Length: 192
Ligand SMILES: [Zn+2]
Image (cartoon, rainbow, N blue to C red):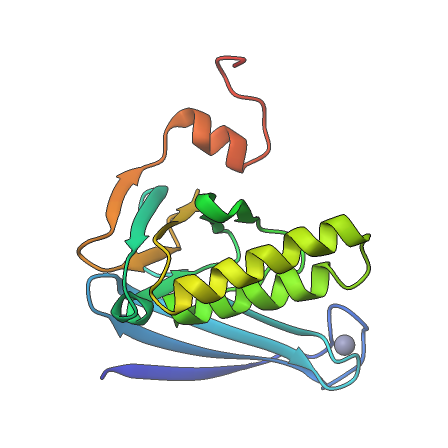
């Protein structure tokens, strides 16, 4: 495996301003059927800021990937999820949109389901009982997906083309103008 690593020394932390505490580590990796990928990990020992992200180094069009999870083996399918990617499990009513704290990572479907589960657990800690029940029902369904007992679709959309479901069975197409506008939070040109 061809891998290159680098370290960027940065004088001061862009978050807290402390000196010599902030650094960015990077790794460039060649992913089969995806191309060159750069992972970055930024952290500050003073304010404990941490951020991880991934981006494609080759030019890739805005894309939408769809994958039907049908078995336990499907959990091994590789997923590249950048901070600019939107994840959906439509049958479970789950959407994970990019935000200021959005992280990027390279994982597999099992890892994605685990992260979604953790996010739901956190989100239902301080909500009312009906919402907590709905959250718990979603977690139960996620566990069933993980055990290969429930078929759902995983959809990954990225207006910058940095995210992908790396498997030949994944359906890939370019994002439509309308999808792009929705993902970027700008009104659709057609006004629809
Ligand atoms: Zn800092």
